[in-house]
Length: 330
Image 1 (tube, one colour):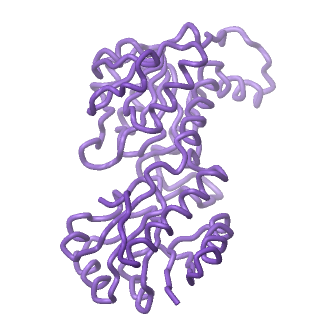
Image 2 (cartoon, rainbow, N blue to C red):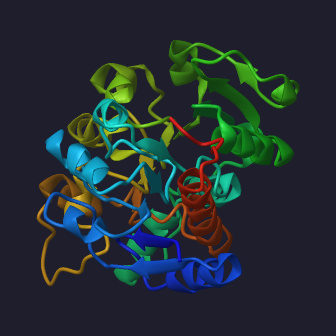
Image 3 (cartoon, one colour):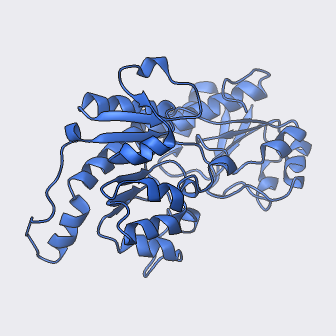
């Protein structure tokens, strides 16, 4: 029987893994452990590898050589991001890497909408007042979406979905992307330069890929170009934003507030529980700000999205180890 090993499996993923295994008559074994140098030996005897990482797989090319020595020919990620994998080393060892590029654009876009609405209606500040038994509303009057311009940086599947949602709700939508303008968004969104987007947008939402090209894409210079009334949202990758620059922008009132589902160094805290402050000082600082809304990397976390991530990654695994191809190969 064909055997696949799935790494870092959460409890809520297991039923979908079991369902897929039964439907395809494939043995899929699960482990709570991530795929690293000290766990790669677990792959020996298996035909395929399905994984999800919070941290970089390895810092050594020997890791990929070891996988190849076991007869492994692929690595299928249960995520869109594959920045934890060294694609060059994988390719040198004939390992085909796949991801799940579109598990549910709606899931992430809906969280961005939720965050935007909470920010413009000052929900974090009202919650802060309520915690102090303060029910005064003065100073927190809101605007409505029809008055606002939403700027989307990264107009792929998620960004495009978000553009349609905000357009349907009456907002003016502008966007920026390295790729050519999408014809299917004509009449929904206007493409502009980053500089114009920073200048005009009342809400800025990030939906770009992680990686070196986008490292600290949003920095002091970018925040300096934004309006003092702008709300900033990042649901892409933590390193896309220079966290210290964001904190300075908030402290200096260069922007009005922020919502973050991802942050730099998040792997040190997310999916963990702490009795006191977290081990990340910049996260502790952000938690103290009444105009900041934080969530622990849950934009993807819906029933539909989790099922798609599991099923698609296992489909790709089986396709490749059976001699076929995947549309999601890098």
